Structures are given as structure tokens and as C-alpha cells.
Length: 280
Length: 302
Image (tube, rainbow over the protein chains, first blue to last red):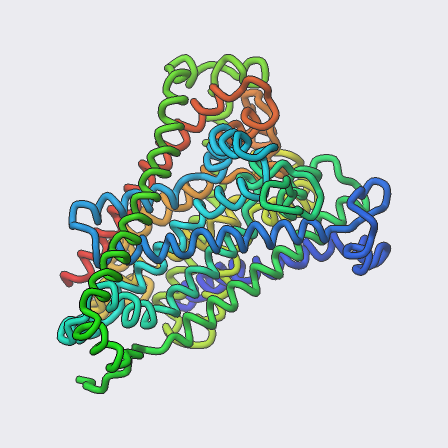
């Protein structure tokens, strides 16, 4: 009797949690629907600019900015993360391994406002001394890559730890040098972990709001080069939500649906990679 | 033992490297070693730069007065006492709502559902989506549901409930890890004594899983403390001392953001607040990691 009660209670709680994602999607959709009907999806990509209070709703420059920020961050962070994970697993002397793990843990726990603060006060002036105005796509990419670096490193490192020892033994038996072993045996063996880490990092990068908003200058425009200011889709929501009404508010909810769709896609890709990982 | 050699190693090139191109191989080995050390050193330098910057600029404005004084002149002077109280309220609401849900889901998933079944996989995928969802999206959801539909307005309650949704997947994962680390023999012993599943759970599994459960709570607390974007449009950013959960209030993270972005000359105070935030998070994080190591050791020993 108590057992049945217990199972029902647990089931009900889990149902609440599992349905949360659907509830969230329904709420976002509900807030966007009026605007979608009135304005139509097409105008979000074809209007002459973004001035929602005057009925112009083009969010394309912000989508471009978000994608560039994400791609740039992955391009900077992924090689650094893979090399660092390899370093910690195969190269680091043992006292350094512990220090390295602490560093990555602290970087992973650091809140995004602190990254943003550092970017705003330290990094942006450094970039500005080199190329005006400083607050730019470049600053965003550098801060984001620092933020997703620990995510990718942790996933790759756990892939390296889970890798069967016999691969390494076989490489040693063939007298391969360490670099050759890492590049030709180890990295191919953990390619699924690398892909999983990169998709997780990409999801974090495209969803990041505060740090990006603090360092990218927030001007709505497709950037001409790395040193132009940009406004990400997430920053746009955070900057305008406070005073948005009517279709303006609806447009921001539509951007959030878009973000949700991208993240769901990335998580599903990640799931696919992890569940189809060949069992060594 | 599987003796087949299933890697992509091309034996010809192995021979080329190890016999003919010996010098060449040594050179590339050296370059690669330099690359991995270089990557690690780069990360270490940036890490020290970031942490050192917060520490050096933050410590100057930090004092006991700063912790216990009200916010004056948008935060340019005074302290952060109301901010700390608001933070504690929001985090407490988030944990009080998320904890029972997280623990119940974790128990169902780890003790009652088959580990590789379709149901548990779907459940896990939905948690992964929840965990990956951008915090600003949670903010918009919270604003639509808690602030508007339920009529809580900009309040600590709205903020806390929004954060509860956000921290759920992380707490559930930690709780599942804690429960799965409890050795099978404990459950079998309970079955052999003809205990009901409820009493096995209550008297055996939960006490044994306490480290994992504490880790889950701390992890949720860390996530909640670090969050900013989800709170901008749910809890708001009032600097007064809150009188009830229905008052608006800002957390330390929002305070740091507001001082840095919207208050000219607020950098010094932003750094002092950031330092408090970072120290809190580092303590929480280290405790979580140590608990995790401990759980792993226990499960290996059993």
C-alpha cells in the first residue's frame, strides 16, 4: 500500500519535471502567437531594419551575430580544450594535474557576470588600444571561448579517462612516440567525446546573455569585420524586454523560441553522438 | 579478450616514423609537447589574470561595513546588505521548490525505471534540454507565467520559482549519481529482510545517498547564485531591503551587472560584490567536487 502511494507520488513529481519543457514551450508560443499572426514570420527576416516600436522587425543581423559569436567561440575554445585535456591526461606531472583540475573547475563555476565584468573592464580596453572601439565581435568571441572552454575540456577529459588502457599499451608496444600516439590513436578513439563537448559548448555559447551583452557593444548590424560591435539575439531580449509592449514584446518572445529551437537541436545532436558512440 | 586491432593505425606510417624518419618523429613529438604545454599555460595565465583582477580590485572596497550597510546612491557607496538578503530569499525559494521535485524524480529514475529503457532515455533527454536552455529564455517564461499569469509581479517569489525550474536538471543529476553509488548489496539485503520498497528507500538508500543529495543542493545553490539573465525580468532589480517575498529585489549577480553597465563610477563596488560572489561559488564548488570524489571512492570500495 505504502509502496503504491510512493510510486504514484514519485511519478507525479517526475511528470511535473518532464512536462516543464513542454509548459515552457507553450508559454513562449502563446506570447508569440498574436505577433506571429499579425506580422508574419517572413518580415522578421525581410524588414528594412530592427526598430520594433516603428513596426520594423528584422532580426537577421542579430541571428548572424549570435551564430558568428558561437562559431568563433568554438573555433577558439575547442583546440585549446582538446590540447589541455590531452595535457592533463598524458603530459602533466602529477602535482600539475591537480592544479589543472582546480583551475578548470573554478572556470566552470565562475558566473557569467564576472566574465562580463572582466571583459568590460580589462579585455575591451586592451582590444580598443589595438582596434577601436573595443566592444566588438572579437571581445564577445574571446570572453565566450573562455566560458565554454571548461565545458569542452571536462567532456573531452572524461572521454580520455574512459578510453581503454589497451590502446595506450598497444601504442607503447609499437614504440610510437607520444605525439604520434595522441594524434593517430587517442584523438580518433575519442572523436565522439570531442563532438559531444563541442555541441555542449556551442549550446552554452549561443544561450549566453550577460557576458555577451557586456562586451559586444550591442549595435544592431551585420559586422563587417571582427572589430565591429554586434548585438546577439540573447542580448537583444535582455536589453529591450523591460520596456517592450505589444508586437515588440511578441518579437522578443519569437527570438526566444528560436533560441530554444537551436538549443533543442544541439542537445539532440549531442544525444545522438553519445548514444551512437562506438564501444571502442 | 578482444585481440583484433580496430584502430586507424596505418602500419606503414608507423614504420616511417619510428625507423626512417626518426629525427622527423622526434621533431613533431617536440612540437606537440610544446603545443599541449602552451595550451595549458595560456589557460593558466588567463585564469590568473581573471581571478587576480577580481581579487585585487575587489579587496580594496571590501569591509564589514560593506556587507552590513544599505545600498546608497545606486551602489556607488554604502554596502550590499539588502542585496544579500534578497539573494538569500531567492535562493531559498528556488531550493525549497526544486529540492523535493528533484529528489522524487531522481528516486524514480534510479530506483524504479529500467536504466536503459525508452522512458528513462526520454526523461534524461528532456532534462538535458532543460539544462541547456538559455537562462534568458527561462526569464521570459518566468515573466509570462509567474509575473503576469499568476500575478506575482516583479518579486522574490517570481525570481525564486523561475530559478527553481532552472536548477532542477542539475539537482536531479547529482541526486541520481548519489543514489546509483549506493551498492546493490544494500538493496538486496533490504529485499532479503522483506522490507517494503518505501522502507528500504527511507531507512537504507536515502541515508546512504546523503552525500549525493547534499552535492545536489549545493550545485543548485551555485547555479542560482550565479544566475543573472533569468532574474532581470522576474525578480527585478530594486535595491531596497525586501519586507516580504512579494517585494522586488536584486541578487548579487544582478548588482554586479547593474554597477558595471548602468552606474558610472560603479566599477569598484562591482568588483567588491563580484569578489564576494566568486568566493561563495568557489567554496560551494570545491565542496561539491570533494563530495563527488568521496561518493566515487565509497562506491568503488563497496
